[in-house]
Length: 101
Image (cartoon, rainbow, N blue to C red):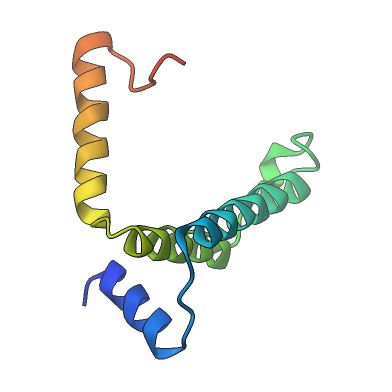
């Protein structure tokens, strides 16, 4: 079963349905936990050799993104394909994947 369907099934099986607004807040909190790991492990960047992020935190972000996509009826695979095409076009046009903002 593909990841978005797995997350949707888990959410349904455990009665964890939530509106997109909640999912966005959850995603922001999970990304914040990654930032906290990175900040603490590297002593606020002073010790980059000790930089680390727990894989479980990455998993939490992925769960949050996939739950958000599902709550918005967005196919995460299609959204990723669109993003990759956008970055590819930027690289072709400007040599940089950044939006320049």
